[in-house]
Length: 436
Image (cartoon, rainbow, N blue to C red; front, side):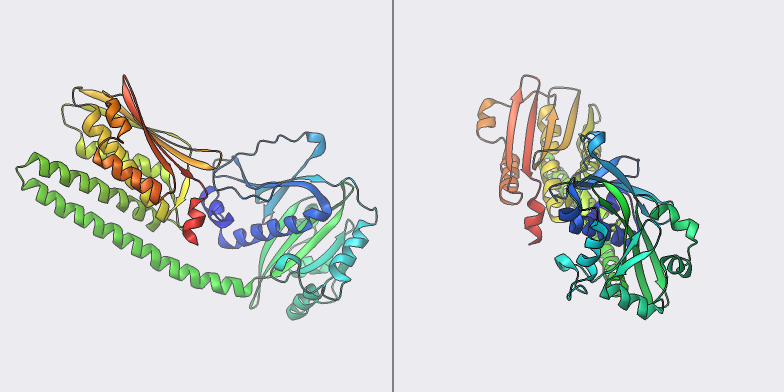
């Protein structure tokens, strides 16, 4: 899952803010070999929890992981991230290098501005302008790209204080973001240009010595994003129409079901309706959001409620519950998973409570190491050991085929004296393979 998708899921940041956050992350990683022994970048979720985006090993997380803060307070700095004045959205946790020259600021100036190819950024970043500013707010040096951006804007030969004022901020507005370690990103629209200004703190032997001010011209990126958003709007409409078409099919099947006198046919049609509705739920979720991933825990809940309302006999009291964490999967993977969950819940409703008037079905969604796991458990009559060895009914054999061939995972059944438990487990990184 991309940083953009995670930001949309957990924080609902705007496009400009996500670009700025990605730019901050790029430059933290760029400076890491020179400034930091360890880094960790996280954002605040909508419910104020701290969700890690990138850790020290430069791994980005697919699942929601809360910051553990395992480092000792003596060895870490927790520097806030602001996307706009007073809009605190996250934390960069760093462990600074012990061995750095006291003249690091001058050395950094040479690194960014003193090389003949300094107008090219490192690591193939989109060309960015750099202004190295000391604690007094003086510009110590710039690189070629910064000079070019300022020239095109007509702001060349200005001091940093003058630049701040002409960009629409008072010296007081931005002083606190220069006088102390803070990551700050401001999105600016100046005539036909869209610029991100980022204040990135600099350290020498863990001592705050100034800031690297980054100017990034994202005008072309925003034009491309506008085109992508227009296409995404069309895609959302397609998902909406597919959902409507699937619901129309289920309505036709229901009409057919009412006209049959065969319980066997009615049962088969009802199962087909539930399978179609589980796929419709995926398209419904995708039609209402700005990212192509699905919350499988929420989808599981909707599937469970749909099947209980469609299949449970009126003289039975079968309840359902969902537990675990929120796991987000790409649409293709989520569709396969939803079919598997539908099959397991249908099997539980149909077979687990044939001699009982009440029961419970629990669906659990979670992650363990590098795998996603889903369990569907009932407190019914269980199944025979022979059926467990043979993979259960035909439906579960088909399900096993989907898990192994489509999800590259494993499926298993366990039966107890008071119930049955089905396990689905597949690699959490499998969706990356699907995209290739």
